[in-house]
Image (cartoon, rainbow, N blue to C red; front, side, top):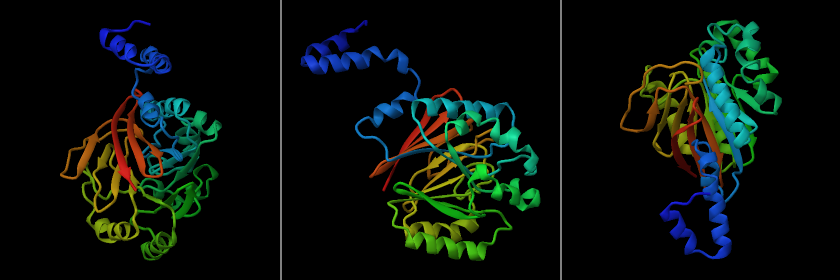
Length: 298
C-alpha cells in the first residue's frame, strides 16, 4: 500500500491496533471509489433497523428502466434490502396488465429472485385499463387494496390512491384513523401524485389542503411520490419531508423552490436507512453514484 505524507503521519501517531485498522481502511480506498460505499461507512457505528428503496414512473420496459434497475441491483449487492416502494405508473402507457412481464418481472428479476418485495400504489397511467384492478390483485405488487397500510420494524407505511377517481371521502377517514392509532416511531406515506414539487406539475394545492394537515397532526415524517419524472427532496415542511423519485425510467426538467434541498433531472432511485433517531436518504443514479444525501429526524 502506498501512503502519502499525511496518511503516514496519521498512522505514526496512533497505537499499533489503531494503525492496523486505519491502514486497512486506507488500502481499501480504491475499491470504494463509488459513492454507494460511503452509505455503509457513514452508518458503520450501528446497523440500520430497516433498509429500503423507492422508485416511480418505471413501467416502460425500455433502456432507462433497465439502467435504474441495474443500479438498484448493484446497491442491493452492497447494502442488502428486501423492501421496495413502487410509487405508481407501474405500467405505461395505459396500464395494460399483459405488459407486466416486460415492465416489471424482467427488469427487476434479480431483485425479485433475491426476495425483495415491492409494495405498489396506482398512478394515473395505471387506472386507464380496468381502473387498475388487475394491478391491485397482482401478488407481485403486494397491494392490500387501493389504499392500505403495513409495518416493517419501526416504520409504518401508508399507501394512498391519489388519482382523481379515488374514493377520497372514505380514504381520508381511513387515513386519519390509521395514523391516529399507529404507535410506530416512523410514519411514511406514499402515493403517486406530488404535493410539493418544482417539476412540471408543480405544487398540488388540493393535497396541501387535505393531506398536509393530517401529516402535521399525526407526525408523518416522510411522503414519497412520483408523477414528476425527476428527483426532488424538500427540507422538512412542518415536520414532513417530501421526496419525489419519479426518475425510474424517463426524465422531465425540474427547478428549485424555496423549500428544495436537492433536485435533479436524473435517472435514479432513492435509498433509505432507518435508525432509531434518523432516516438517511440517498439519491442514487444509474452510474451508481450518490448524488444527494439528507437526514430526516424523528
